[in-house]
Image (tube, rainbow, N blue to C red):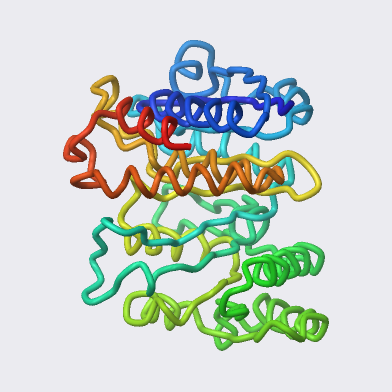
Length: 348
């Protein structure tokens, strides 16, 4: 029995989560896995009614679950930053979800903007540090709103935070067991303090993983190679800010936000899984949004929970469903949101 907290969130979030839960229940029936889903209304609508984003009491409650399944956060009537900071970042930081895991995988029958590249070329993982770096909100303003205004934002890198992220990445590379190559993506030639720490820890830890080849690439070179030679990569480990940027590039080369999923992982605690595409409010209630990213997020959740056989079955069924679709874009898929969920659920 897995107790799962469900946060449908904003816009199309509840719609895609509904399809993911449908698929989870189907996998549960086949592989004798039971789920107890508990629903929460955190998001823009609640904030507009109550002024609350995520109460501290909710954090205490969420710590008791096996995982969190999130639909989307983002409301057109709420100023950008309020929900993202008050819900997403608060969850990541207070639950110490120090790994952001993003598979970048192109499936057959999915179009990529990269010429002459196919599924055999685009299949890697990005391990992003998720609770430090420039996202710690350390900084401030001086003389705000004047011609002499100064704004500062400090980058925080602790040895503990860096090392646990790098160790996770080495373990993920070993478990993946493909090219067995781990690439550190940083900017050591400019960020000579913070990223020197990353480089030193990376090389020290690599000595314990003699079966894994350690490589290094500046972040600007990484973005070029992700476009020109994505087949070079197996697993990339990187900082919070750089990971935020290169994973969105990764989502585009794997076919777009409609198919990209991610996990915010605490290996010793509660992890959270979500589609990457956002709330897409203009499609709300039309039954035309692509639910595959949410379904892949559910699949990732099962994999992290140790239900690897069920996770594989979901992925295989999703791939079969993709082969029947006309497009990954909302309204152009050839099927409705619920029909795609039904096809994946029936094929598990």
